[in-house]
Length: 258
Image (cartoon, rainbow, N blue to C red; front, side, top):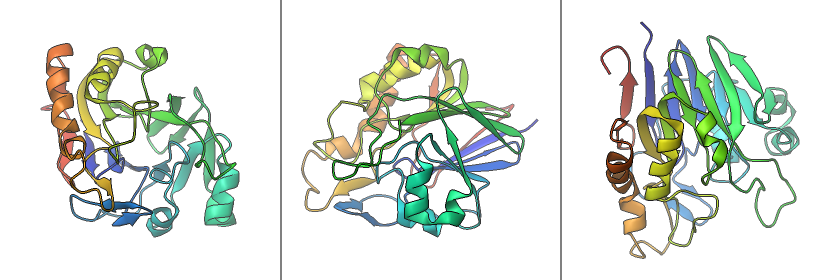
C-alpha cells in the first residue's frame, strides 16, 4: 500500500510525497525575508525537483519570489485564480506558462493525485503597497491519503465540508509578536479547525521559523510554543486525532502502520 510522507522545512514550507507524486507548499528557502530572519532549523534541503508547487496566496512569506527561483526543475505552479499575471511579472513568461489557476472547487490532476482548491479566510493581496490581489486558498490533496494544506486562514464555516481527512497541515501562530488573529489561527482556534475537519493526523506549521530582526526577546513564547500549545488544545478538544509536532526537517510518514 502507498504511503504519504510530509517533511516540514519551517514556516509553511512542506514537502509532500504521495502516490509517487511530490508537492512543495509555499516555499521559503532562504535565511532572510525582508525584515524577517530564519531563527530556527537548518536551511531547507529539498530532495529534488517537485512535480508541483502549491501557492496559497500572494503574501511574500508564502509566494516568495527568490525561493521560487531557487526550486530545481520546472514544476507546475498551482496558484489562486488571478495570480498568473503576478507570476509572469515576478518570474517571467516561462514560469507563467507553468501556472494553473484554481478557485475554490476547482481541481487539477498531478500524476496520481488530485489537487483541489478550497476556501481560506485570509487577505489575498500582495501587500499594502501593491494592487496585486488574488483570493487566498487552501488545498486538499487526494492520493493514498486526503491531506489538507490550509495555507493561511482563520476559522470559516465551510471547514466542516473538508473532512474527513487523513492529515491536516494547520497554520498555528506566525512570524511576529504583532501578527494578530485576523485571518490567522492561534493554538485554540487551530484545535477548533481540527475538530471541524475531522482529521486522523495533524501537523502544526507556520510558527517557530521566522521572526523580525531585532525582536529576538519580544514575546518569544509566540515563536517557540504554538506547536505544543496546539497539541495540548487538540488533545482536549479532539482526543481521537493524533498530533505530531515536527522539528525542522523532520518527516512524518502515514501508511498501514501509522
